[in-house]
Image 1 (tube, rainbow, N blue to C red):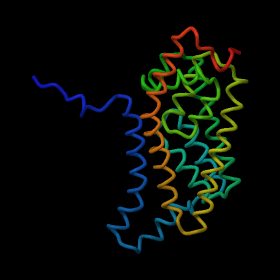
Image 2 (cartoon, helix red, strand yellow):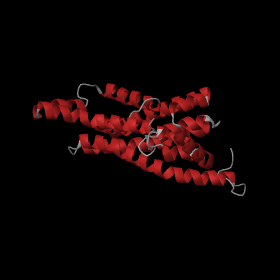
Image 3 (spheres, helix red, strand yellow):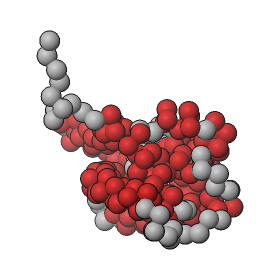
Image 4 (tube, rainbow, N blue to C red):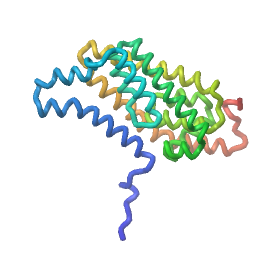
Length: 245
């Protein structure tokens, strides 16, 4: 009987991130493979698809809101969606659509975790991510929502975790809304800028991949911070940085 090598066995904590990486790679492949197979004559059709030429501005707005609202439950590359929105709606429209969608998704996840508790949260996020974000939330309070908001997987895990801590809606919504506006405006500005400089497709691809790389770095860095926070939490001499509400 053979046993799996722990060094080569994928960690359960890495599975959501791997799924998001595969989706982002699929986004890269969708416009590239048809060009390779059908030639450059297909380029105009790809450009039309990328710019949403067949959709009205209202439909584009609705697509962005719908995709980002579902990000709390599905592995949607939200940064790439918002960058695409910046190119097809402009800075103001894409920022508004992205902020609305991201906020609706966060409200949905927070509300469900408050209602259904740990059982729901354990199904939607991995134990490692829950432990990391729970200790960050316990140490830094709602500020953890702002810090993790740009990071795939960790942002959703943080929203779900704070829903089980008894955090009130009044303390949850302001940091989420502010960070959503900042993140949305950043990627929407990138999309609008690179659309006007003939680099729209690369901008969408990079905006999807860079947050993934940042999340990978955070997953390597956070365990050490979690260990330090756990030690401080267990030490009765260490006062909390944020007094209880």
